[in-house]
Image (cartoon, rainbow, N blue to C red; front, side, top):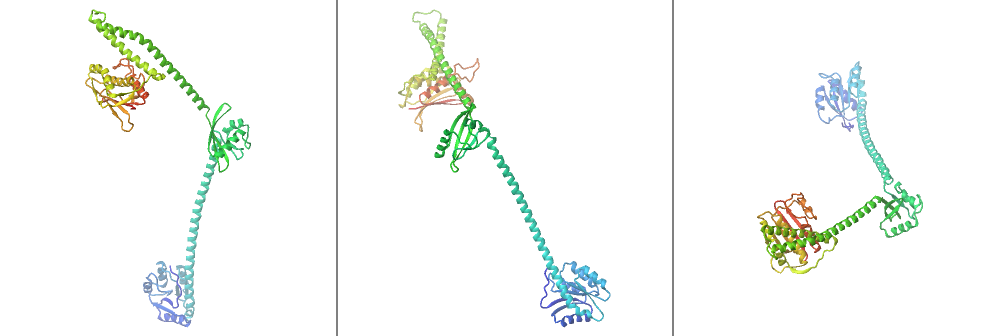
Length: 524
């Protein structure tokens, strides 16, 4: 809505059906020496058409009330209703004051009553200028009100925004204060001792859990620590490093971590009650010592009982061998010969078991004799295969020797080396069904330079969960009394222990119904 500024030439839209009144209108401005440009229409419809533009080229409308067709009042209502912003002055006949009142109510700015003598004409310029001024004042007031409303709305928005900010800040501050109070309670609520010693050694803070230590020190808040501790604090502040000390008092043991705060010159002491840990540790050490003693007693018992069994066994094996060879003459019945051979075989098997038990006992007690020498591997492996060849043939298992005769040598105890290989070959043959095979090979590992002996079978294998059990002394995968395979469960554990004594290691890989591979790594 544009403000109507009075230009140098006053632009007037005059709606008057009487020509002499229109001429008188022009004379009134001429007499006042006011430059005016009058657009005269006799009918309201034509005047409305002239206004039908976005920015009408007029400063004011002056209209007679009595017009042919639409009267002046109806025209004014239509112009105002269409939202055209322009000041309007109505000319009403004498005795038509009620028309003027209606016009003012409808939005007309001013009116003039025509008199028969034409005296009203002299008032026209002043009334027109007054209407234009009122219109401009109204527009200015409306703009001011709009600006005031905009400023008010902006102020309310800023106040609302600031209120939200202040509310958020207040809430954040409350949360921070609650957090601070909560954190401040943390040391006091801690079940572990916490203390702070200020520069000079006086205790400035101690939580409730520190009471036993404070009582043992014989001090309260604000008093100096004992001289021994003052020296410790001085050393720690000088070195800048933390220190952990065990301190016993009132039947408890505390682990005290002393932390220097160099920038402030004080030390913090954080304690832990380790009384139960110390007791548990001592109990564990005692139990371990008892277990070691019990294991040693067991090993000594096995060694002693094995020695006691070896003497009669040697006699049984020796005499049964003499009888089976019939050195002193025939024994008569073939049935006796069969019994003697069974006695001899059973005695040899029992002697092998006792020998393994003795070796395991010697290993556990550290009394196993070990005499290394430099020997070739191929002959050793061949002699081991010979020892189990009869057993493999009886079982229908083929042993393949893949160890090459290229002079590959190793520094080891020949007897212990053969003991490892024979035990592993015997196991492989024992757990491989008829028609299966066992393969033994040897090679040098490139990375470590060690020699790796590999024994692979196509036997029954075992699950991954059973491998650990098989590697423990006397461990049996089939532990029932009616188990299918004989043995006391010492072959694999003994081979592993012997390999470790020789500076190597034994690793077992197995899958059920596929087979087992044992790898023995030994230093050259």
